[in-house]
Image (cartoon, rainbow, N blue to C red; front, side):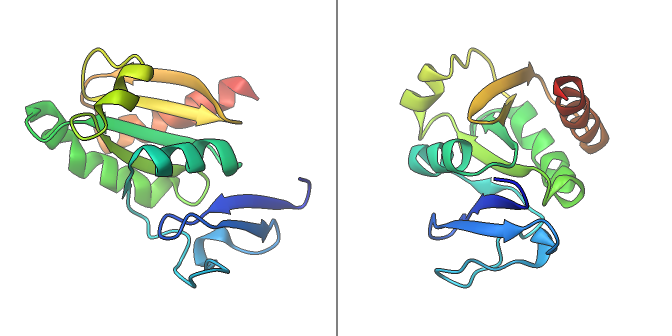
Length: 148
């Protein structure tokens, strides 16, 4: 929709229409009043993943990880730092492949950490391996720029 963005609340799953002339970073959910962005990644289950990628119209960057994965744990602070730079233009989610193994299988995850970038409800890019915060930011921005 022109003139606004649909942003899905990570707390209640409500879909919020935020006008383009209003800073999304300070917007609150109309349903539960929680801020729509907290400058940090959100742990997502299969339902949250689906709502964020299918109902929202901002890009979604997903870090697929597992608690036992050393490189995943090493990348976690970098992914969190990247959220402070990329939000509110991109939603950042963390998807635990152990607790959401069916979804990880449907997504074709073969190694972790893997980052998936979604835009307009479709996966547009993926990359595997640990990255620094700046590499995450650059990769996500480059992928979205190449789509434009």
